[in-house]
Image (cartoon, rainbow, N blue to C red; front, side):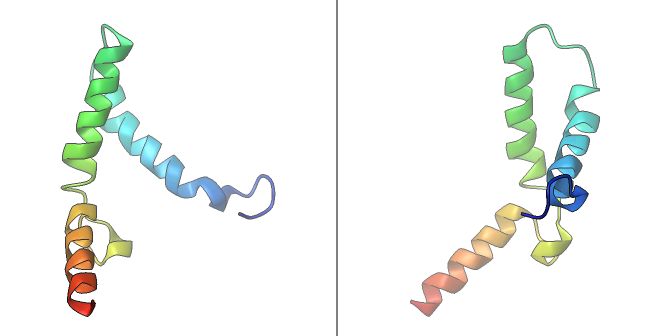
Length: 77
């Protein structure tokens, strides 16, 4: 954590919410909060974690990174 009001502290979350808004929230009107909640969970689990490659993870998706990491740890043990 940096000083109060430091923009860099929440840059990752701002980026995530911007992507969420562009890909889910702004796509259509939602008839209920529950429907929107289900769509957000679906988007995070199906798209964000499984398809979106991240530079800080060596251009792997989070799921691919976890698979490699678990295999490496298991072999080291």
